[in-house]
Length: 312
Ligand code: GLN
Image (cartoon, rainbow, N blue to C red; front, top):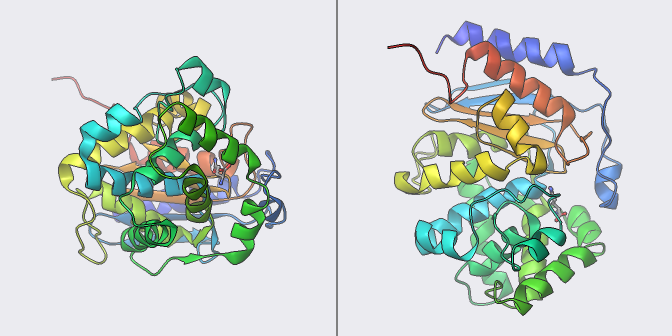
């Protein structure tokens, strides 16, 4: 990897897209509606722990759906790939992340651990002795992957717990069809908490760099996940990481990604590192507009598309 080329690519992407004003903050979670829309950050962490940043990379934002990746890593570790695949799935729903119709269409099987239904089912799969134990295990996994102590935001969590009726309904539907593996309200509560933790771009990119580095955190040296499980997790990100725009993302960028309605976006480049972007305004599917543009720009400049090949 040419370091100067990378620094240039990151700075160029930031300068080019930081003043784009398309998209809107998430408004269905009141807290997220009032985060300053102009904030923009971009960070790369390599598999050797090198860090490059530009913009608002110290700002801590709500991780939201990107937490689904981390809880999935924990579930894969505890249950193995086959059980997670059998119980939850590995397919795109083609529908919004909180779709009830997606459940109706697939006999109430969530299909993907990266939509709300599958994510709550994944949270319920964590072997735990009650809500606090479930929560602490997930928080520890978030901290281990981020390489620093991750904290719950009381403000974000209060805002989400007061408005998550739709997710509670999904949790009950899962219970009624046998796809919920703990008390449904406990799963929804802990899922809501896992979405309400705060990350900056460096912590988010470090989380992704664990997945680029065979499951080992390149900053702390801690083994997070066995290397054979990493491709399974990245495959889930490729199929559903940007919801109903996942196919477009694969077509245009060719990297496993995951977005959150807090404005975070993560992309993993296996054996190289990870890019994390933050910018609150979202497209209609719930993916950061500037985040997608910046990561696409860096990935294209660096020739990081996973599907690239050369003639032999
Ligand atoms: N906490 C949010 C929800 O459950 C996360 C959604 C997202 O980031 N796409 O709706």
